[in-house]
Length: 296
Ligand code: NAP
Ligand code: PAF
Image 1 (cartoon, helix red, strand yellow):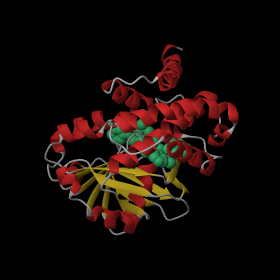
Image 2 (cartoon, rainbow, N blue to C red):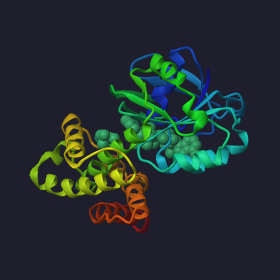
Image 3 (spheres, rainbow, N blue to C red):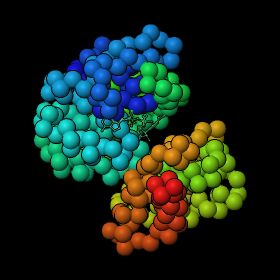
Image 4 (cartoon, rainbow, N blue to C red):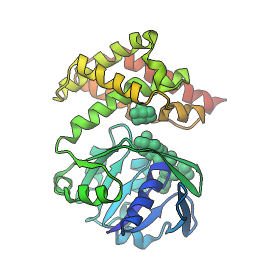
């Protein structure tokens, strides 16, 4: 397939290598204006990819969007006139809230959403490290996207394990719950995920999870408090030594994905007239941290 990676950062560069190794014709679309980008994955041989080649958008079968959530809409809108109406758009990022506007703006394109637990780190422009084996789940967001099951085999061949899930909304909501509970707290405390297993943090996490359960149930997603709390604590334990993505963003004074994590939860809760005081506190705390960089 002709595949273009929009946003060749850590996750995008990992997929670029894996898809190229699987035999696909892979191009990048990064912010860098150079015509080619040379990238090395771990200790494999560096590979050279075309970058920002307009033909790579026109001829693209699959546009894999690996931007941060807040970068997705502005980037896709700026490229809209160059994106073919048949190109499959796969959105792969943490958080929720981009998929519906993308479906609205790209009404003819198949839109697929992906969530991954692989870990990737890009220490510099030329290198990417695959820091943790994980799993990727895919599902269709619109009618045309729901007919793209074949992508499971394509992506699984490149970087297993990939699963197609007809109920991708449930998968996304469970991931959102994990991110709502772990990301802002670890960012505020500047701690590893494992710290959150300690009783003082558990006392904060429980009401956060309770609010999320109510919103998920109002959205028709089957869950209950004990199950969701167990899911969150399982991730805390499995990723105990990780620094969450939001902790890293705050540490490096980069804009976080809070609007698409707790921010998204709060906006959906409002539609159902549900109160989310605990998630709102976390949201405000992260916004205040971000504001501090702008004014300092
Ligand atoms: P990242 O390294 O920041 O990658 C985003 C890339 O997009 C950067 O190279 C950025 O360039 C580029 N970009 C920004 N705006 C652009 C535009 N308008 N056009 C083209 N390129 C643009 O982030 P990441 O760690 O790969 O994460 C991507 C998403 O995956 C996030 O939602 C993250 O939460 C999720 N995720 C990440 C991991 C992981 O291990 N890294 C794991 C699971 C999920 P600049 O750097 O120049 O801005
Ligand atoms: O955003 C992250 O860091 C990850 O999604 C997770 C699961 C919280 C692990 O650090």
